[in-house]
Amino acid sequence: MSENRAQPLLDPAGIDQLREALTSAGYTSAGISDRLGPAATAAVSRGDHRAALRATADRDPLATLIRLFVCGQSEPADVVAAALAPLPLAAAQAAGLVVPHIDGVRRGVDLEPYGDRWWVVADLPAAHTGQPLAADHVLGIGGASTTLAGATIRRPVGRALDLGTGCGVQALQLATHADSVTATDLSPRALRFAATTAALSGQRWDLRAGDLTEPVAGERFDLVVSNPPFVVGPGSISHTYRDSGRPGDAVSADLARSAPTLLTEGGVMQFLANWAHVSGEDWRERVAGWFTGTGCDVWAIQREVSDPLGYARMWLADSGERADPQRMSDWLDWFDAQAIEAVGFGVITVRHSGRADPAIRVEELRQQLADQLGPQIGAWFDRQDWLRARTLRQLLAERYVAAPGLRLRQEASIGEQGWEVDRQLLTLPAGLRWAEETDPFAVALVAGADGQLPMRDQLALLAAAYDTPEAELAEVTAAVLAHLVERGMLLPATLD
Image (cartoon, rainbow, N blue to C red; front, side, top):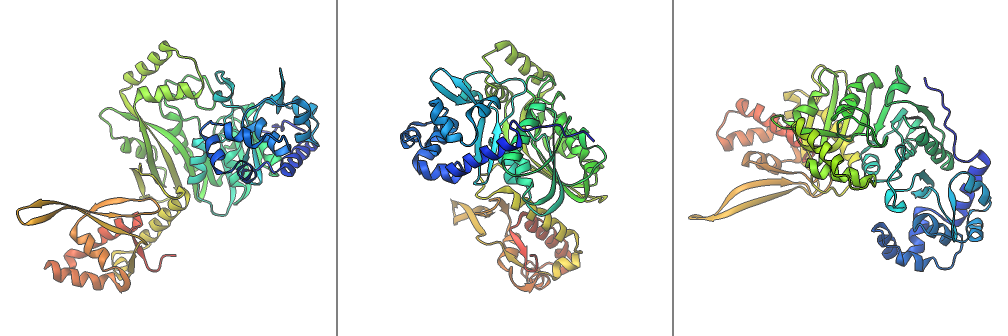
């Protein structure tokens, strides 16, 4: 086990003083929103700080902190000292929280409220400095970290692990429902930021240095989350936050293969991943192949797809790197050499079931979601358990109800006999918002699912309507039932 040597940017007394300053000023997500108002808050998220600067002209402590850390302004040293009190300005400068500037003091780090009781400390984005990111740059709260946090199943667990913690965003959330949190990172700088985030937010984590699973070899956890350096490329490392040093999508495959040795029985791993779409290969089979022989149930969801040119442009811009036609050409040539036509991005959830025939689903979910993904993923695994626990006879003995708000949408075209239905779709307006093309049999099955009759009684009516023996219709019904239940369109009346 790697020794925990990560120390916060401030000593314990300084952490307490900084927390007191932030709390007393009301420097929280709600405090900032209330001070700026909805319009200015929305404008800040788009990079427009004009209204925010007007709303903070008074220079009280909260206004100063907003101008300093949110708007990126240089403020007079005495005003900043008053806003950070009781933390001495000299201590804040020594820790790198703020730095001297020609006309006062500027922020040296990204100090961002995360909700109303936590603060996250990280490096400043390239857009805020106008300079390329350093090789050991530590990301703050961003789109990827928010995606993973929203996709995580939030149920009470014993031991939780955050692989590649960065500044500690995932670990903060894990501590709300885990008895203990272990967090690892290859970067010493990231571990210092994570230690600061934890201390400032009043949490204690077991921080360990090392590459991915190496610091926890031989240990098992009930929940593992990871936002790893998943960028697909030739295997070179220019920035530790995005480059694993493994070629292609090997880092995602490595994480997948580690699940059985990392997880307790029934334990869950959730991680963000990129995967290659290789010419002549089904990307679904590629991802599913990572889990062959693991004995793990898997739900891998592709949320986005990018072509090679757009992908390379995005990541070069993300790090603030200057235009380098040769570097772009080398990356694209590598894609061509590997026959990679596109790169997918998504969320993978793995559960250590130990079964010889685990459920493995790899599919696209590109639609806009109304709700966070985590509760939906947890419910999907619950429904898998429910289905697995029942024989065909038991499935037909159950009563079912249509999901709340389930709709039937029909598309028709005009013909000689009037309107003719071309296809029918069952759609969920909430949750995962599935839209499934279906047939008249499934439509009839759902229509009769009012929670009153067991499915075997519905089956008898359907057999008569379709002039088909019940025994022949039973297996078809079970397959349709299982799919509709898995999708959450038809729910067992007895499922909690």
